[in-house]
Image (cartoon, rainbow, N blue to C red; front, side, top):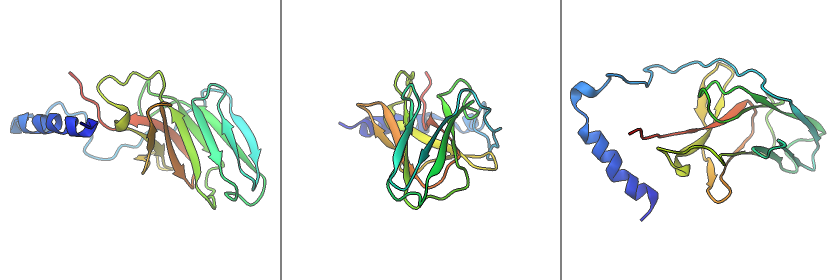
Length: 174
């Protein structure tokens, strides 16, 4: 039985157990989108020049990796991975600013973040997703996040850079 087929009855039970008077009370979900502040640098930036042949840039602890395929850029380009404070979730997972910002790559690059060692109580790896912050301060769920449970890593392909982290898309509190 898959994780989602076991989760569905629980979600339905929670939905039908709510009373009309419960809706909206003590809700932590904002009714309007929330603008978050931009994260501040929280560690040494890693800078690497990658050319048309492609390459990788990774944090020393292995929590973040950027894979640039051949043909993503036409010429040698300076890539930067800057650890920043996570403003999406206080005490949340590491967040990273990727540069050069404002550049659209010819081929998607792959961003990979590790969730190894994270406390997933109340959620599951299948409910994790990469998120990025746009120039206005809004966070967006990255489409098509891939979960590698055996390696405890999340990855996504993108053609743009900004600030990136991961979050739980659903969390059940008891």
